[in-house]
Length: 212
Length: 212
Image (cartoon, rainbow over all chains, first blue to last red; front, top):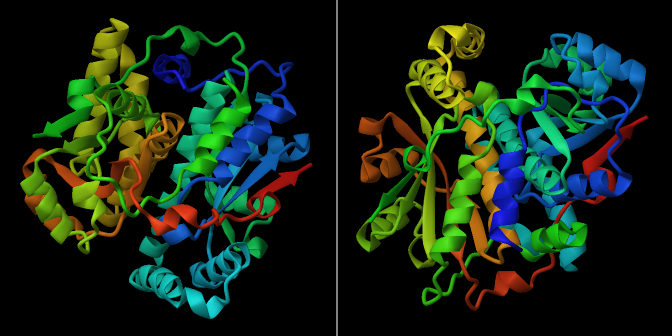
C-alpha cells in the first residue's frame, strides 16, 4: 500500500453537502465499505452496533425530516444509520457464543473473556454513561467507513445532526434493542460549493505531540 | 485502490497482545498513521483531540503501571495516547481562527459556522455528557489509525484499559486541557498465541441490515 495514496484519499474527501442523486455507488464498493465496518475492533470485542442501510425513498424522506432537512439524507446514493445496542447486558453472552463457535471451543473455556466483558460493562453503573460507552465504540467503524470509502473514491459525510428519538421511531429500532448514534451518506459530489473550500485542519504540530 | 487489499488488511489485523520489542515502525509509516488521524473528520470540525506519541522508556514504564501492566505499553514500537480536550468552550473560537486563516476569510464571515459549533457544544449542558461528546469524536481517528496501520502492515492494538486519571497525571495533561481517552500500540507482532486465533466477528448478516 502506497503511503501517498492513503493521504491523498483523506485529503480528497470532505464533508459532502450536495450529492449527485443520479450517481450510484456500486454494490462492490458498498460491500467493501460495510465489510470494513464489520471488521472494526471494539471494546473487549463486544461489537455493540448495527449498520442499517436505508434504500427505501419514503423512509429516507422521513429521515430527512428528522435530520434538519439535510438534502444529503435523501440525495446521497446510500445512507447508513449506525446504531448502538441498548441492551448492554446481552453483549457478553453473545460475544462468548460467537467466540466459542468461531474458535471451536466450549463456552466454559472462555470464562476469562466473559469475566472481562461483564466486568467492563458492569463497571459502568450510570445508565447514560453506559450508553455513551457503547456509543463511543460505534465511532470506530464510522472512521473506518470514512477511510474505506475515501480510498475507493466514494464521497461520504458522517452526520450527528438529527433527532435520535425520531430516527429510532421511523426505523423501529426500540424493538431491535438499538438506538441511532450517527449516519453516513455515501455517493458522489454534485455541484457543491463546499468541495472547493480548502480543507481546514489543525497543523501536524498542533495535532501531534512527541514525548521523547 | 483494490477492494480485496483493504479487506485483507483488516482481516490480517488483530488486537496484538505481544509485540516484538526489537522491531521498530519506520518514521514514514508512523507519519502516515498520524497524518491520517489528523485528517479525520469531527463534529462541526472542532477536532477536540491531541495525539501524544510517547517514546520515552521511563514514561512508558509508568504508563504500563497505570495500564494493568499490559506488556504492549512498553514493548510496542510506538505508543500513541489519544486525548480529548477538556475546555470545550475554547473549541469554536479555535475552529473559526483556523478556518479564517486557511480559507482566507475574515472571522466575521464565518458567523454561521461559529453559531453551529457554539450551539452544538452549548446544547450539552451536562458536564459528563459534554465530555463524552468530545470523547466520542476521538474514536474516529482511532478507527482511521487502525485502518491506516493495517494497510501498511503495521500491527496495532487500541486500548481503553488504563486508569485515565493516572495517565493524565503521568503525562501532565491537565495543564494542557487534555484528558486521555484511549491508547494505541503500534509495532510488529512477536510470539503471540493470539495471532493464531481465528478472527471473531458478527456475520455480515448480523452486523448489517438492508431496509429496502
